[in-house]
Structure formats: structure tokens, C-alpha cells
Length: 219
Image 1 (cartoon, one colour):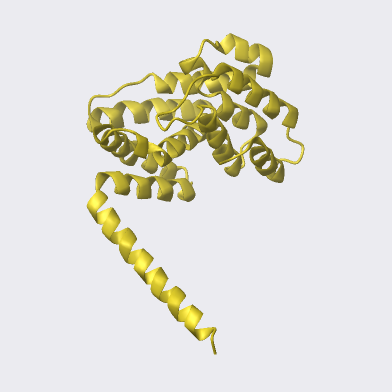
Image 2 (cartoon, rainbow, N blue to C red):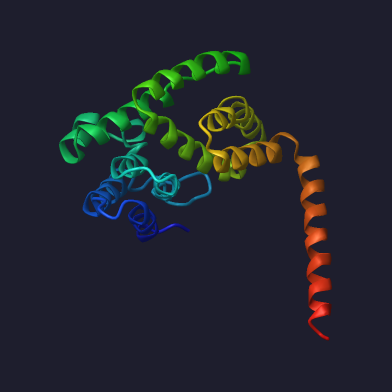
């Protein structure tokens, strides 16, 4: 499990002069806002924004983006307002959280509608601030990594939306690491039989290689 120190260490590796005090403040703020909330797997909700902020830091984004990762669900899921975030963290962080909150409010009834509408909204957000899209992709990646705790119907819907919208968006932005991870996770939920067969084949190949390597070390 990711710790706050991991986030800070990753951030400072790319931005030595990062405002670490602000990141710690955002963490405490998020912890207070989400106190008592849990995810479907029973874990404290705070783990999600912490994981998102770590992915954001791995993308080499700035302090404001990492703070937005920690705070991105506070307005949507708690009593916190954008005005409160602006008062505590400044206009830059508040604008990112506000944009992310707006993206969360769109619901779609079909893959075709999702492609047309969601892609358009994201492109609008991107034209204003690319960081919004990158934090959103980080959020989606962690949601996909914890999709196992949802019912099958919802797993497939989210995986299809991710494959239709978010993976291509990551590809268009040249973020291959996120694109590949999203596509692999989508394959797992959209084609579980094929995924298991492939995973088993890969594991068997690894086991054979490990056995041969261990045997060679005996001589």
C-alpha cells in the first residue's frame, strides 16, 4: 500500500523544490473529509486518493496536481466546497478539483454516446489545463485496479468505457505506461476466459525458465 512519504519522495525526485508542506496539508484535509468512508473492499476511502496522487507524481506532475489527486473526490463525495479548497490551497488547486468534479458528473447510456460526449468534454478540459486529464487518467487507472470488488455487470460497463475512452486518450497523449495498464485491465474484465488462459500460459513459461535457471546454477 502506498504511503504519503512515497508520494512525497516521488514528487521530490522530479521537483526538488516542491511544496511538501502543501501536500501534507492536502493529505490531512482529505483524511478529515473522507473520515468514516470506506470503499467496496472495506478499505478506508483515503487509500484511493493517496494511490491516485502517487500515480500523478509518477507522471512527473507538479505540486498542485498531486494535491488535486489527494482532493479530487472531496467536493463530489463530501461536504467540502471548491471555495474551501481555494481558501486553503489556492486557485490553482481549486480549479483542478473543480474541473475533475465536473467530469465526474457526466453519465452515459451507451458506448457511442460516451465516446462522443465524454471525449468532447475531456478535450475541452484538456485545452484549458492538461493536468486535469492526467489526474483523471490516474483516477481511472486506480479504479480499474480495484474493479474486482464490483459486481460483474458494472465491471464490464466500466471496462468498456475505459477501453473506448480512457485508453485511447492516454495513447493520444503519449502516456504509454497508463495506456498499456488500462488495456490489460480491460481485457481481464471483458474477456476473462482468454485473459486467464493467457495469464496461465505466461506463468507456465516463467516457471519453466525459473526451473532451467535453477538447474544451471547447480553446476
